[in-house]
Every structure is written in structure tokens, then in C-alpha cells.
Image (tube, rainbow, N blue to C red; front, top):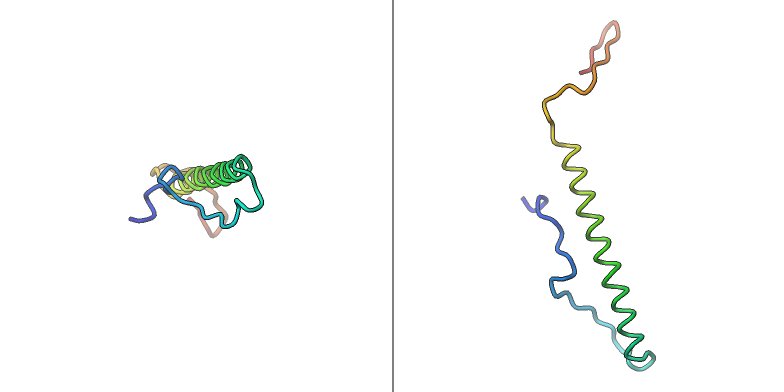
Length: 77
């Protein structure tokens, strides 16, 4: 299923377009901006992967009864 694979991380060769940056930023500034964008995207990808893992774990039943609650008319297992 498409939902079971982890997100692709930025190391896959993703390219960022930064038009006209050379007109108002130095090479070092451009590199710093692109590094910051790369790090932010990578961090978000890891967060999404971890959230997906937690959601999958929460939705996967272990077959064990976690709790039982009962009233006069209902029983929740």
C-alpha cells in the first residue's frame, strides 16, 4: 500500500529553485538559506515518518485486552 512506505527524505536529489537570489545574496548566503531549507524539510520528513509509525502502532491490535469497563447494561472490552 502507498501508505506503508516511509516518506522520501531530501537526500533523494530534490532540487530547490531560488530565482534571482544571486542578484541580492552572496554565494555563502544562498548556501546558508538552502541549507536551512534542506534541514527544515528533512526534519519534517522525519517527524512525519515517526508520526506514521506511532499511528500504525496505535492502530495495530495486539489481541490483548487493555481494559474492561462494565455498567449494568453495557460491557466495554
